[in-house]
Image (tube, rainbow over all chains, first blue to last red; front, side, top):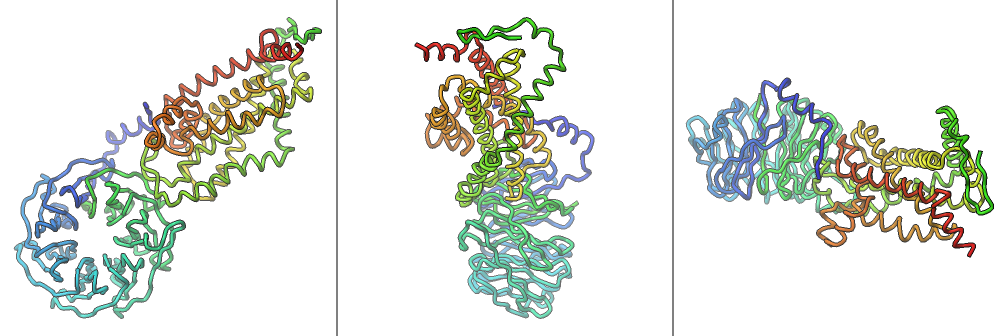
Length: 324
Length: 288
């Protein structure tokens, strides 16, 4: 069937006259077909697909936007991609089965969770050398770092703990018990709290960074869905610290949480098995990876409405957006 | 002036040629006001016209909440809840029932003798029929917007502009279904036969269309049913409304709806034509 958009003229005119100085690129790791899909955040269209190592999962970008780091889990390495050429230019000694990682605020250190080895590997990205290996709980996954870079939090899926690690001594200072299968740790922009999602527990624990104890527990309830279908994974908090987005896995929804009252305000329908989230640098959009439906969904953060879903590779897992 | 002969044939007078646009407007206004007043005075009709689609939305669609989002098909850019998918179909349902209901009222008018008052009017028959059609469509569009207003609070929301852009699509679809009802009314002899319309027209048209399920889903279930859906003009009315909600024109649907509107209106005018219409044939048949 032939279709016609009334906005055709506008769509043609926009790139000609209102091209933004920076079109941010969205990088999505596709776990199953071993690729990274590059999507233009303005046009919401796929620009390129980059072949990478086996089972790419965690993905992040250097603060200057020049280098992309991808956990190639089954190749036991972290690959480095030059974002100007979209080619692999090197790798980092990640340790076995790297799943998720976090880059320090100064951009010099990468903290990698090694799922099979119960370790967090600390790497200097400039010298590409291992600085330290920190033993943590069983099946480490979630990695969060405080805005001042002094505290790193790792979550271990089987031990059900959030481990607080001092980044200067590389030692665990506190262990906080959370609900079953913690997946992700995210600091509030002011560093006051860490939010830890628990996939099987179906909750997000809010941990006070001073007291190092759980102060709030956020639960989710969606009409028509069984509780076990609600599995919180990725968590992102807005730059002003007022709103949080939680990916709810097989519930196919992203929850919008008031980060001041801890009340769930809305559930946004996205694709199937929503996993990780990333904001665009201007904070106007948040992007979710929908593993089973092989797409990503752009959500408008002003209205909290889904705008468009874009097909990427198979089993999209992680997502990161290039800075301005 | 007109004259009714002893055979029941109505002889048009040459006097009608003298009517100016103002007279035509007065006649149109009269028919519109009558239909509007009749609708407003029948509160049960207003409520029942709303209850039907709302039951579908609140009960039927709610059962499908488990269906976690309808796959992305145009005009949708992302996943939508089943309630959102079914809403244009329910708008179509209102137009369909309303179109058939006006055919019911034509039969009622004929039985009660009110139609004679209308048909003895010196205005051309086609003008009277189209005026009646317009009046019926205006009433059904009011019902659609009342339904959309309630659906908004149920969380079924389209872009705000969509509510304005869909008006022409609703009007066209309403004209098509109203004209179909009018054509059918010329074939129904008695009020009791309306149940037949329900069983043989409304339900098949509604269920064998894209109102409840996307066509790709229908095709997966039954290729034959898919072909039937494609032959059903109601499918195109629903799709026209669905795309209009998102500011898009589905050209195939527009062409099909326009064509069927023309055919049905022409058919109704011929059917109600005193010299060759179906009514007179039926009357003659009935007298034998």
